[in-house]
Each structure stands twice: as structure tokens, then as C-alpha cells.
Amino acid sequence: MVKQPSEKLPISEFYKVIDYVTIFKSAKWWEAIVVIESYGKRSIAMYMWQFRDGKWKRKHKFHIKGMNEWNKVKNSVEQLLPKLTKEK
Image (cartoon, helix red, strand yellow):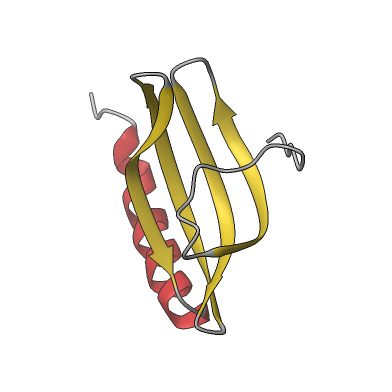
């Protein structure tokens, strides 16, 4: 994971970016986990952008608004992780 604090994320000005961590970045794709704030409330968003037509455009966005929601996501992913390995 690489953090590049001098880079401005391609996120709407509607959100205030509190902090972020870049997960992956290439010439064509950029993935980051971002703490954003709007209307005084913070959430964590997972973003994926694609570089097209000379600029970064959002491809995917997924919000996590609190610990309960994170636990549901985390437990679901952990439940499905073993299925990444094909059974013989």
C-alpha cells in the first residue's frame, strides 16, 4: 500500500477528504481507501478509478458507514474467502 499525500484524489468537491491510502495505481487503474466527510459525518469509501479520455473517472465506489456495517462486510468476505481456491 502506498500513500501519496501530495496527490489530489479524483473525488467530487462535495466530499472533504480526511485521509486515504492507495491500494494500487497504474497508468490505467487507481484503487484507494478514503476517509471522507459530508454534512459533518464521516465514512470510509473504497474507490476504483479508470484513466479514460485524459482524466480519472470513477468506476466503482463502496461506502462503509460504521463498525456494524464493517463487521457484516468483513464476516461475509471471510466466509467466502475459502471459495477463492478451486476445489479438486
